[in-house]
Length: 198
Image (cartoon, rainbow, N blue to C red; front, side, top):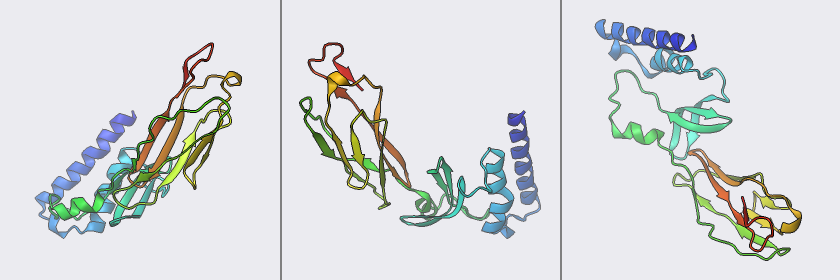
């Protein structure tokens, strides 16, 4: 039912546009009219809550200036939209540049070797080609491990014979261009029951 409703709403938008073309009114449509009559109704039909600024925010600031809309899932920008009037040529390169934002890049961490009951520490770093501020976080770390998001430092003193095997540990960096994640894999040399845990 929802799919049929979506198809119908999009069909009506296409018919509305075709009528404007037939009436030779496309050139009279400015950017605000285009957003109000076509862009927002299209994304509403696709299931976006365009009235909720936590999901679709207007006039989003990015490193190169501002774009008309940022579309978010769980607070994380997934893509940006730069609106233009119906009469504009969307192949103009300057329009494309306005909405491009790249994800962050994580510097290589490399392999780490530590003895049981000894402290393992390393600092991560990431860069963003657009100069956006980055936030750092860690998910599901092994027991006793700590990640300082401000200093970007991971620290852990493994006591392997006392700890259960866990499944996955993630470091993630979030910028306006998206999220980058890295999975940490720990190997236990000499453990009697297993030789690695993730």
